[in-house]
Length: 95
Image (cartoon, rainbow, N blue to C red; front, top):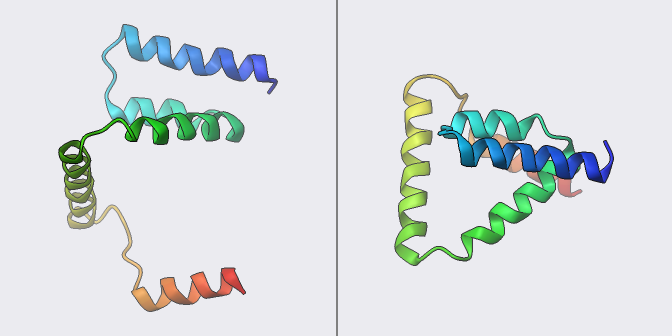
């Protein structure tokens, strides 16, 4: 996909977002269907936007994320991975 096409697709998503009430699942679905380079650009913009958050907003966002993850665990939607396995895989990636 060419740069202009990526720009148009990102703008389409933003226009849809601004003109309709979209929940985060819909936004996530749309964003995940972008090409890798477009997702990287969007991720960069989203990360930069976090710098504008106050300390209490950051704390609230992390609390929301922790609640979401706990719900996913309780509902059996995710598989827990033992710390030893995560450490082993991380070491293997680094070496």
